[in-house]
Length: 416
Image 1 (tube, rainbow, N blue to C red):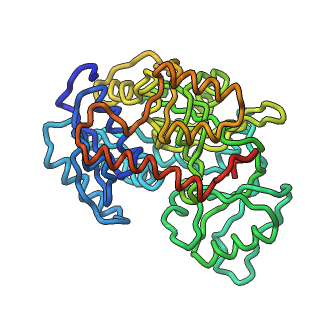
Image 2 (image 1 turned 60 degrees about the horizontal axis):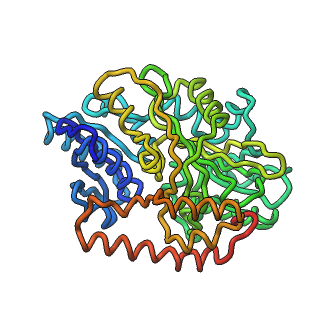
């Protein structure tokens, strides 16, 4: 139920996936307000929702096209307090580039270009972690800026195979299109890595790529941390979850589809220290993995946005948009909100999830949470009455069975 209905707020959310729906659900549950999705092809969970309106934009819209749409929305709603939200690196970078102009019309819970560069470039993130004494994977940075030169060659990799390879920055990689593209690459041999370098070079990639040591352990070793830093530099929201299962489709690898909320105070401490040290403001989402060999918490990256699975915080009783609205809309200082309630957040059928949890104690724990009625599914929202939408959501949920059968048929020790 909404805490206190507010008709003065209009959340404007760029994108069209389930993460956008999650942000909208957070706002609707907290403030009873309608939301506006700005996207090229929103999912039916959004278009069929009873609290979303949609403003269409062209696919791969330019900064100018997106800015034009957002300024049009501002003109159309002069009496509203507008909040701009997104959960994709491309849009976070867009907001940072246009922060001053957008800030005249919208509340912007995003970091500045400087703070974003300091932490979300994965190479600079590694250095920030080293300074704070926080473990990160061993990393080699491969700079493609000179790859047009015929003599260009990638540096030697002194990390034992298998290794993990991924872009240092989300946006330059996200805008590239090539066959067989993956979000994260698991590389078994030097020859396979050389093939990736050739592919990236010919696709026109000219930013930095990272090669990192593969930390062992399956998806259940992953932790997700969500935080909000207010306009005074205080972390007024913190929460975390133990990942149970991640998506395994090539362009979605690393996105959790099931998690248990859980407090990890030591991880929270590290996250808050990193944010404070970079002058960060707005939402942040950290990926951390527990190394089963020694129990170290290895920080992988921070995403400059609320995160695709943002609603898990609301399900655990710490709705992330509440402290943000208090800060940016109402100008209020507030006590830190913490997610402390244990719940299961899941996007997949229970039988599918349980098949991939191999640890008997963890499986018993998950079954107990389901039995106690503490299982929450973002898209199965009791407030949604549109039968066509709800059927589309149910079919999409069943489609996970086909996806996992294709990309990750059996659980493994490394989850790849």
